Length: 616
Image (tube, rainbow, N blue to C red; front, side, top):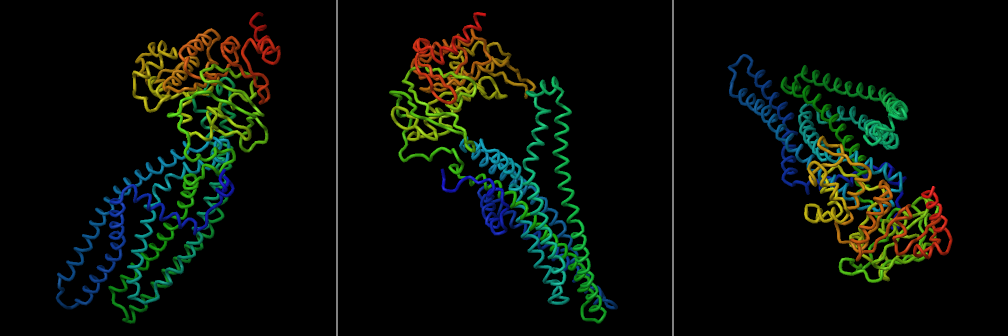
């Protein structure tokens, strides 16, 4: 494990402003990596957009002053037409700039989403299984997934802040025509709202974080009612009203918490809006008095009126966008927490790669696998699932693992596939510790079919091909795997044979029975030339005759492979060279079928019990 342990409480802590400010360069760097040209173009458009409003106000001042100065004289139209033409040009140009900016920003945000989603999916797919044993990790992963939209648009919000700042600086210059400090009155009346908005953003994010589990439960209740796999039980047991009621209860809890928070801030927000209005009033009255005294021109008065409202609007917009950046940064921090997660930080994580690890690709299996005093418990639990398990699996042998439910059989398979490392004891391959091997090549040398295999709603060929992704387009190898596993007869009976889409997600999909799906899953194991084949009770949906036929086929086609399988049917188990009996996590007996029957121990009891049922 890493020195820095996985600590959900720390990860769910709301980051400080300083911590969040460090994210901004990282976000911009990510966008730059996506498209430097788009970032440069958006930056240029931002500067232009920020100067349009101040320039329009200044040109209006010039027109008004020219008209008033020409009273009683011949108006020089050129002095009016040119500023008017410039104003109209700015309006049209602004429309074009906004249109171009919208297209570019949309493209950048979509590409940014693709880039960050790829990073998140890759991170989630490479983290150790130990993380997925921690419910808090699911909360964290849910938040990270939900906040990708924030990272998608955060660069745009940052540019909006720059645009508001540019516009504000120019407007302050216009306000100096009235008084050098006039703008301060307006700014000071708006600034308090910045702190309120920040506080509201922080509290809103805290509420969302606190209710992450609530939202996950809400989503789960909805999924129960809408997923096809659960539809039969929902209807037969009349579960609809139960889960709808629970769904609504979770929703009402969220709504009540949100309402309480909104009411709390409503009064304060109204008071600050009143303060802002007072600031505009004070500046406007002062400008009127100065104009009446002849201290400023009518054009300046017009400019001050427009600039005062525009400054308040710009400062309010700047405050709003800064809080938008703040809120989005809070959300994005959850995403970066996942991306930065140390894969060694959780209890039960695999040890880091050794120096010069052994590659199974270039290292043929010679003697086999041996387990010595292997014990294991799942992360965040205190019960040993496996206790001092010891036995050997000679190369090329067929090994059956038997025991009651909960004896630790599937957990043992997970250790053999190195999803976890033992708490104590060692697993060795050809005399070398499992941890001395390159993890990818080790797993690449193991073909495995799980009891809870995945049913993919893709073509039959691809369902088999996922057993070896590099060969997923190799139809010849897919057909060969189907023939070896006996799934070819099933596939040939499908409407489009290997091109038939399986499952009912798609309109053209064809669903299979449990036993048929298991035939497909077993075919996956034959897609790769793995020297080790593990079958974690993949034939539970087959009758005993079909199961025996399948294992006989596997035995013939796996003469040069080491086969490890779990089965509750002793007619199949007796075919194994070695049988390992697990009881309460311990390997209580190891031997051949005949040897274990002769001992008249635990295996004999289980065999006789099942045989008696068949005789009856």
